[in-house]
Amino acid sequence: MGLVEWACLHAVNPYLDWSREQTVGTHISLSHTAATPPGLEVLVRGTLSAVTGRKLSFRVSAHDGLDTICAGEHERVVVDAERFSRAIASKREGV
Image (cartoon, rainbow, N blue to C red; front, side):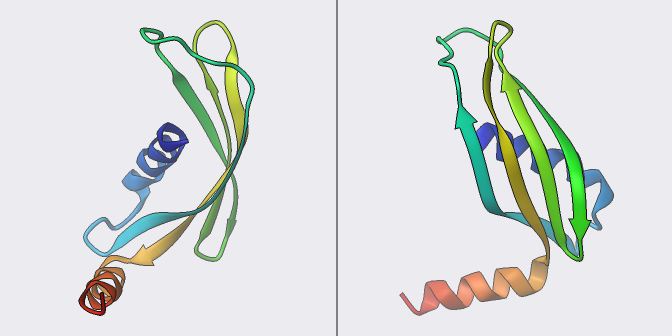
């Protein structure tokens, strides 16, 4: 799951104003269909299937060279980096 999120994050980063914008994962739905033993390389493929305002929707799959190991959807939202960081800091202070 983390590898799929990481791949989508890196796919969109070149198109963001990184000093101002970032993306956060908001939803992931994957069907895990095969196990991958240690040592195999996993390739994640994703397609940006929709942009709705700040929401980015991806169709994703991962393959280990022998089997498709998962497939599904992932959503990310473009956020204002400074505002998001302030919200996280404020939450941390409240703990």
